[in-house]
Length: 405
Image (cartoon, rainbow, N blue to C red; front, side, top):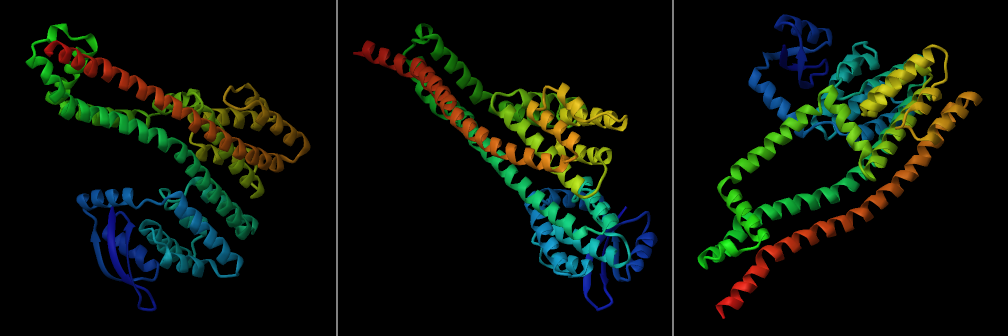
């Protein structure tokens, strides 16, 4: 059960938040354990949960928010600011509402004696298991400041990479949306007025196939436009639900990796995520099997996750991890060879850094090629559309004009 509370701290400052507990008494006990004086405690009703969930969708914690938070936290910690004080400072100035409230709650829990990593673990929707495990390794090894610096670097690079990928996909996505939207508008509002002339002249039977096809599509769009829109919405929801299943995720991942040009883009993205995350983990002093388990959670590809699962078994049996990668069609041969060298020389972290840097440059080249290829494809589609329109509308109109004369 969720309870909304208003309370005061020792210094008299009022705080507002939510706490999860089995009952109101349990919630009150937990808040008193944080040394808070409760002024109001009410259960969050179902409709409030729904409103809160909708609010979180529009104010979720993005990669940019996390990157800024990590960079600021690493700077404060390196400046010898105590962790509790650093969290309090950041909690007071973070613009994202969800992250701000999370940091305020984490700060109180750390101030109450809880480990930083354990406090973060209570907010899995904000902090990934990778992030939590890295913080835990920093606490254990006494290198929290250094680990936070590495995490800040990684989040910033991930955010930059994500921006490049989205930038590459936005242009074709926008053009395709405009084409479909424009076509639908033409069929519903423009073409009916033009095609009506053919019916008035009584020449419907003599019209070419392209014109009759346009008339059929136009009438269908006019009469059943709501069916088309509903079908698109339902189809999108069903597709989204399917790709959230294990089978759907695997299928969609396979399609992405096999797509022309963009398949290589996603492959490089997964390689960069693997190499950069694994490098940070090794620097943090985590063992290879445990590190692979953590990396598995951040790649975002079912096919690569399966590959890592197989690799973990091989490593635990004493075999090199490059052996499993060599058998996978999804892992570039150069990555496998470089990992083998890194394992043999004991410089795996250096090799992973070189892999990351190389594929960062490669992904820029792939994005440039993708954007150059998209333009002629779009021009071809536009040409086909214009040709169909000419064959279906303009030529018959010219024929009617000549007959009328």
